[in-house]
Length: 483
Image (tube, rainbow, N blue to C red):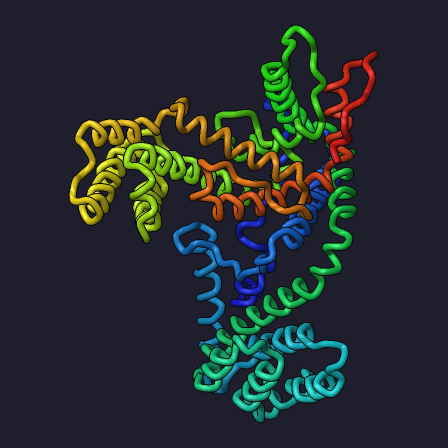
């Protein structure tokens, strides 16, 4: 029977991340049975849900309702309206017809019972007594049913069970007199209370889930891997690209370029994680083992790009106007506010970044000249102004020397954080990054938490892949463990 509860009490979060769906190649017949596919889907869903609960402290279930302009939304609205109109017609007839109302009362009773705790013995007994469906049917047969009396009891019971945040909605229920509108709102608020109960349970269980999270996620992923052995293909490609980069970096830094230097498995894995912060949609598919954290890693990557640009602008400005201006109280703070405001969101498209940097160059020169005029009474020489404006504008290029330098410093800082582990203090920042040090340390901490948990869960899956990449058959395995 359609009602508002169907909409409000849906316990599936809208934005819950999930592993990519696994499809057969185009034109190929499905090789798995429907039951095995459903089992795989359930494993993926359970794994994603457990992971989100553990790593996202702000995670909570929310009421789900389809968009009003979607087909699902329009159909839902039509069906619900038809049901409530039918109830209105029944209750307005002479004599009133209560068949639908009795069914709704039974559903309300069931919902209230689902909110009771084991200690609510007296309340459970009272609920069975007041909402005795056989007695209510007898009252209907004798024309003695008092819907408002039952509704008053239901609202009082809801008020005793709800979280404080629902108190205003409970008070609003007491002011309703139309029985149809009252039923509709009771179901809506009961749906919210049910979600509140689920979220309370999640918060209560989170410490216990944390203790078992690594083993649970590892076992769940193993189930997926057993059913679909290709579930590590993207991960293998991701680690292979990182291994090639690390081998090139080690060779470039070796005093004897012709000799083959050992490549550390830990260094490869750290480089692979940092690659995720620079991921492009045009690259190969996202590694399966990190897919559940993509919703957290992508924003960190965008924030990292902003910090690189910000640090680059600050470095160029400092080089042209000297340290005396930067030492003025409040100058750096105002300059950073301008940089952030003008560059926000511009780095996603090259043309947008060009325009933003052009405007930023003018803004930086304005603030520098204002500061110089207050201090020394003279503006920055025109030659320096033109040079600084051009240098800032040229930062849109990915191979810009200053941007590359800052990017390398940032990558080195993140690698040092990953090598240090979650329990050690952050490494010292290079001088070029100190003005954005607090933001970079915060980003590095959030990134490190994601990485260390991922390594704890998926280390046993990475180890054989790295062993195969770094130690071909016949060579000694002397590398570090990936965990």
